[in-house]
Length: 117
Image (cartoon, rainbow, N blue to C red; front, side):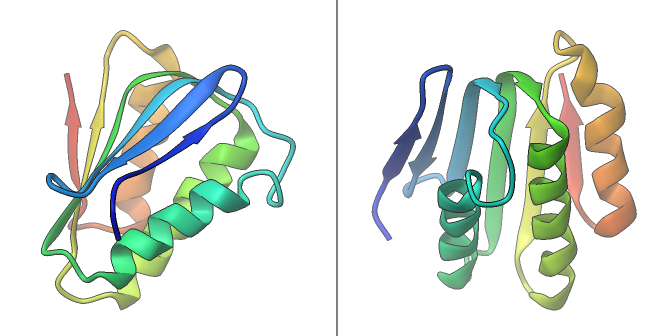
């Protein structure tokens, strides 16, 4: 899979194949599961390539609604069945929602590496 970008009015999600990093930027407040479909599909396509490590960089994501948090949580939960893929989630202390919400992801995937800067 090559690099890919999903853009909306207030957000972008970019995949860098070289670093196996998906970078989220802006405000993600999509309506529900269907609207999050392209992002969901991108996450699972990256995992299908079986990388040793995959990074979700959320440092520039200022808002993620409950549908987005649910989508991320289900993705992290699904990784429990994928042996050999180390998930790294990078967040920012400057985004108030990230501290608590991202820490909850470790409940779904205990070996998740969480970096909040």
